[in-house]
Image (cartoon, rainbow, N blue to C red; front, side):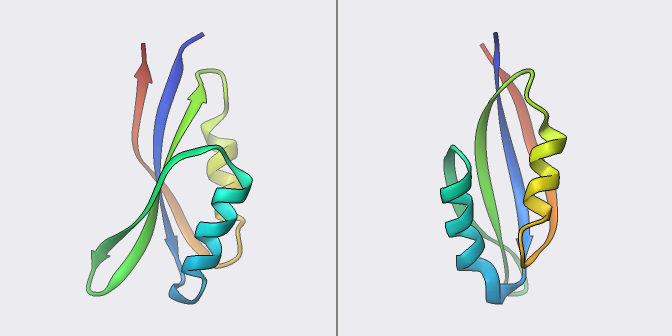
Length: 82
């Protein structure tokens, strides 16, 4: 079965930025996580997930959006590996 790499951008209220980043590390098998500048001093979290091709990206997106302090979640990149 093939794998996919999916990068999510998670827009977070600045007061929750560090808390959300820690929760992601504890809840998911994330290969890379970093804070990025969106513009005008606004920061977001970008997280790289490696998933089985049959895993639901929509379920992960929904679960991320339910984290306290998260205002929106968007897929930045999705690629099939191998």
